[in-house]
Image 1 (cartoon, rainbow, N blue to C red):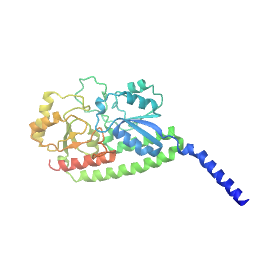
Image 2 (tube, helix red, strand yellow):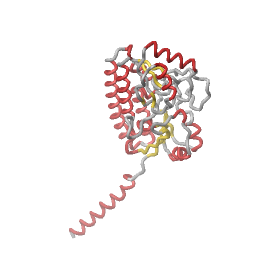
Image 3 (cartoon, one colour):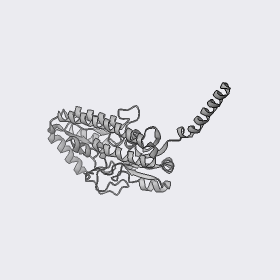
Length: 307
């Protein structure tokens, strides 16, 4: 009799375990992020409850992105679409329409204090036109704290059962962002203000510059697809020479040709590569947002000390 009772109890336990399996094996929520940096931030908040697809991948340029059929399918299958906003993804509305997307869209930058664009090259009518705002808000870590909160709220609204997980992940990630920011502020504080001058390919670092008090001069405007005039290039070269600026960097997703020309004519040796609008590949120095920021900060500090 005892054997029969034990057998019955074992069968009941197996039955209950089987009933619980669909919950444990539920597919992760399909989320699409517009570009690689944002995709990493979304993944850090969502954890294992979500599966993130990134439209514009590592080392790719969102300014000139052209969606492929696979991107349309990914958006069509998604339950949440996460975008930067501030005009960064000029192609996103047409992509969502092409995919017949009816799900939620969260703008990660909602609520930040947007900077006016510093783009003098507005004589082009491109799909990525940013309007009156600089879209590169992620270059200030404090803005990413806002991104994280917006993403966590959107995920919790979509998946209330995971709200506690998203909140916990967001809190842990924000703590890491704050730690990085404190370290960076301490490092830049050790460099005289007059030395904090940098030349880059395009105006992607205005938020960074405002936060860390670094002056950035760019060969191009806010978009990589804008072209400066010969007069503007000549003026930048004169400024580099007169101010003896030695910190000049390429960007991972930009064509280096123009900056190579400027470096030659100004007599400056390029300082390497910064990661502006995209992560590196997995084997590179910036495979996630925090690594990107730490790498860029380290590269900049090494070079501006020579100014």
